[in-house]
Amino acid sequence: RETKDQFIIDAGQKHFGTTVCKSCGMIYTASNPEDEMQHAQHHHRFLEGIKYTGWKKERIVAEFWDGKIVLVLPHDPSYAIRKVEDVQELVDCELGFQHVVPKCPNKVKTFLFISDEKRVVGCLIAEPIKQAFRVLSEPADPESSSSRECHRAWQCSDVPEPAVCGISRIWVFRLKRRKRIARRLVDTVRNCFMFGCFLSTDEIAFSDPTPDGKLFATKYCNT
Ligand code: ACO
Ligand code: ZN
Image 1 (cartoon, rainbow, N blue to C red):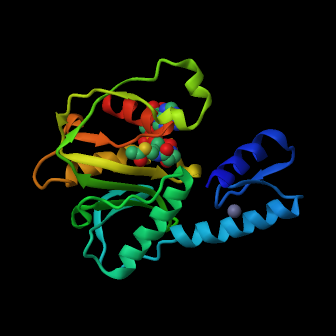
Image 2: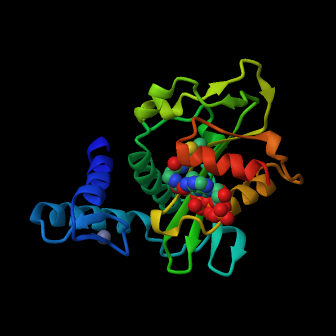
Image 3: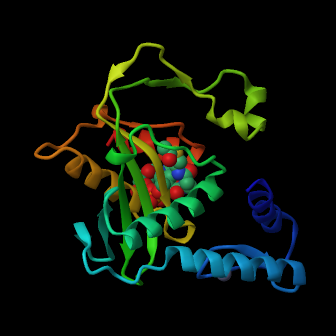
């Protein structure tokens, strides 16, 4: 993933004549054969991964003018599980996360935001938790901000607070960001995670947030 991320960033900064693919979101130089080949590969894999053909049995938990949210549970048919795995692989690859095996795989709830173009453009993975540690502040050491890895070293309280729902992944397709898709996913989780109650923002926790994730979470929890 390191190479792919780096590639995208470099291509955007150093080269002229770069193109943003309107389907897969990759930034590449169309005149460069190597770039073109990498794009062709990414394009195909990405679009296959997020293609959503519609399922006979789908659990629609929210509907909007521009899409819907579908909930997938661990014992759902294999076509649904396979789609979740494909999307999770793309997300983990983009985030550079190792695939983490959840503590209670039977209790994981995956929410997919399906666009009206029949693509999975958002994904949220939630699991039950008992406690969380509140993020206190950003690291004080200014030098640490130069390294990508250190962006995740937020200081956390060492006093655990009770929580109910852990959000282990939240992701929105690059070209669909800032359209309140993440917000609608979290709203839906708060509404559906525990039957009969709407979780407060204190009862949900984001695990190991990225810089994007932290900006979103801070905004979301304060509004
Ligand atoms: N920078 C600043 N503010 C932001 C950002 C950002 N990158 N993203 C969201 N916000 C704030 C804004 O205030 C926004 O409201 P506004 O657009 O009206 O100003 C508000 O949060 C709501 O944002 P949404 O539109 O609902 O968020 P979006 O659908 O764009 O998704 C997300 C946010 C999921 C973080 C997206 O940027 C993404 O997928 N990033 C890459 C993957 C990633 O880093 N995910 C988080 C990993 S951490 C974890 O999984 C626990
Ligand atoms: Zn493409």
